Image (cartoon, rainbow, N blue to C red; front, side, top):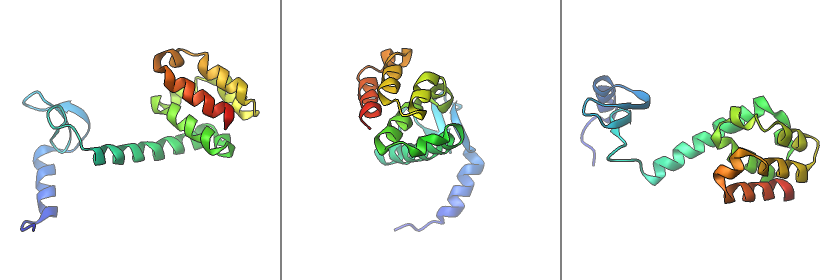
Length: 138
């Protein structure tokens, strides 16, 4: 049972620790984020990781809506493949011009081949094969 004012404590900690939305080194030299969260020693919980992932998916989908609106007309599997690839950043995904063009005209085997014919595919290995298969098969 909580006997203290959680909202008051939150305000006090934000005042005293600060609110940093990007990682930084605290005065003890530990990698920290948020309101004094030592991620170097403490890390994050699986639940926190899922909240971050869910937020990332929403942000990526909105970025894809702006950058390549046709993506919403693709099958569920192809949409998931694009979001998966966009975890590297939507600007980087936009560099896959031939793949995106092939997707836009319904050339799914061509789009899959373009995904595999990239530096990214060599970096991510089996992931590229799985995602290219999703693009090809839909």
